[in-house]
Image (cartoon, rainbow, N blue to C red):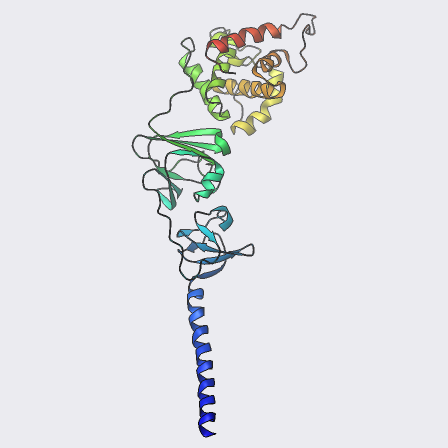
Amino acid sequence: MTNKRFSFKALSLMVVLAVIISAFCAVIPVSAAARGAWAPNTAYATGDTVTYSGSTYTCIQAHTSLTGWEPPNVPALWEKGSGGTTPPPTPPPATNGVTFYADINYGGTAITLGVGNYTLSQLNAKGIPNDWMSSLKVPSGWTVEVYEHDNFGGTKWTYTSSSSWVGSAVNDKMSSVKIYTGSPNPSVTKPSEVPSNIWTYTMNVDNKFGKGGDFALLLCAVIKKESSFGAGLPGSPSAGDGLMQVEPNTRSAYLSQFSSTFGRTYNHSSEQDQVCLGALILNEKIAKFGNIYNGLLHYNGGDYWYPGATDSYGRPILANQYADIVYATYKGYGGKN
C-alpha cells in the first residue's frame, strides 16, 4: 500500500508539472509574436501575428503600417492564418527597378518595382496602397510614368531621374504606374504648322485628361479654326476668349467646373487657361454627344443645335461646316478617332 500510494502521488506531481511546463512553453512563442489587433503607424516584424476582422494574419515583411495597409489589402506584407511557430519566409525584394518611398528624402517604407504597367490592384498586391509615394529612385536609363488615377487615368507625371521630393502636386497622389527602360515611342508628334507654344498648351491639357496625345491634335485643329493659332486675334481683346474663342456667357457657366478640374481660378488673359477652358467644354461635348465629330458640332452650335438652326437674327448656324473643317484638319494631323 505504501509503495502504491507513493507511486500515485509521484505520478500526480509529474502530470501537474508537465501541464505547467507545456503551458509555459506554449505561451512564450505566441506572446513574443502576437501583437493583438492590427493598428496603423505601428512597426511590425517578420513573424508577428495580428488579428483583423476576425482573422489572424502573419507578417511576412517587416514594415511600419499605414492607413490603407490593412492586412487584407496588402498580401505582400501579410499572410492570412497564424503561420504556425515558424514564420513564413520573407519574399526577396526586387533589386533591379524603381524604388518608391513613403516619405521624402528616400525615407519610410521602400518598395521596388521592375519594368511593367501597374494598376491600383497590382500596386496593392506589391504592398503599395492608393495615393502614396513622396520620393523615388530611378535607375539611369529608366522612365517612370506616375498617374493620378487607376488604370493610367488623370494627370500623368514623368520621371527619368531620382527625386527626393516629388512636390505637393504629386505627393501621395499615385494610383497607377508605368515603368520602362529608355524613352517611350511618342504616340503623336507635333504637326509642323502648329507653333511650339500652342503644342505645349495642348499637350499640357492632353496629359491632364490622359488622352495620349490625340486630344492635343484635336485642340490644335480647333485653335487653327478659331484663331489661326492666335495670329487672327485682333489687337484688343475679342468677345471670345483668345485661342479657343469661348464666349463670355459660356465662360461664366464653366468657371466653377474649371476651378475644380484644374485647381485654380480661371485667368482670362492666360493662353494656357484659354486652352484649358475650351478643352474642358469640348471634352464634355464629346462625352455627351458620343464622338468627336458630334462634339465639334455642339461646341460650335450649342447643345440644342440641329441642321437648319438659326441664331437670334435668323442667320443659319453652320456648325456642320465648322465640324467638317476642324475634323478634316484633325485627321490630317494624324487623329485616330
